[in-house]
Amino acid sequence: MLAFGVLIAVNAMWAFQFSGARIATRELGAVLVTLLPLAIATLLVMPFAKLTLDLFRAENRVILLDVFLLGTLGIVPAQLGLVLGVERTLASNASVLSLTVPVLTALSASLFLHERFTKLRLLSFAIAICGVCLISANDIHNARLFRLEYMGGNLLVLASCAGSAFNNSFSRRALSHFSPAQVLVWTFIVADLELLVIFLATDWGGWRQLAHLGPSVWWSLVLVAIFSLGLSMLLYFSVIQAVEVMRAALSVYLLPVFGVVFSALLLKEKLTANLLAGGLLIFVSCFLVTVYEEKQRHRRTETHGSI
Image: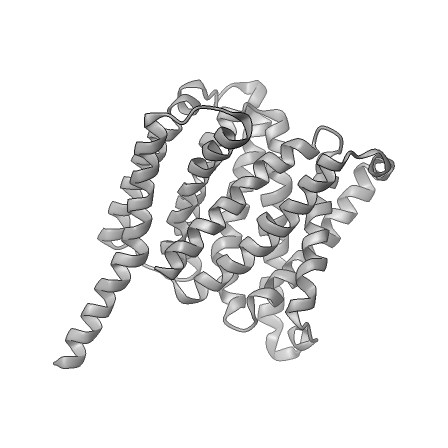
């Protein structure tokens, strides 16, 4: 139940990132919109990480490579690809493509962590996908995924989804040796340095824009850093230390639910029957793979123990 509740909170914080990034891109370039909250999040989490140089010892060479890959193939494409992609494609295309994240995460967990697709997990994914289709019916209907003019943006969004999936699953290897805060800070430092190089090479003059940013943009960047990048990832890493990644991955389908709820609260959009029905299906699917599956595992353990 604790894992179930934490995953709900994590996805609510992740959902805010889309709104925050849209506000910031009105006044800043995509690379700076990606770099600033990531750098702020790095500084905020660093005091809790208690970093040492253990990562650079010879026996941790494989984990050092894992951290580099997480920053390079996980965080950078996940964050930068999304910001660049939504500028170049329809919002409906980005919404539909984002639905691939849980499936890609589950496939990554199967490939890198050797986790199994059980019948219950397949059923839960099927229920969740039905729920998401109800919520995203308009986006699916309006999507133009194969239009040539949106192809570049679609590929960037898909790269972002693949980066998120890789980071969500592959990070568990590093978490077996270091704390969530340490893994988060080290991977963020890798991503910060790479994004800084990209920024210096493509948009060095963008620094001047910082002096003219309004309070709403700064607040959106800080809130994304605190909640969407910092606290949410610490909580998610803590969960996947105790729960298999494949089970946690299904919770990502809560993102469109919270996205629509935020739109209703902040933009006064109406909550529809499709949202309520789809949200209920997704909650049921997440409950099955977190609470119910864990209870089943405990029952099997107790049965074998009594024998």
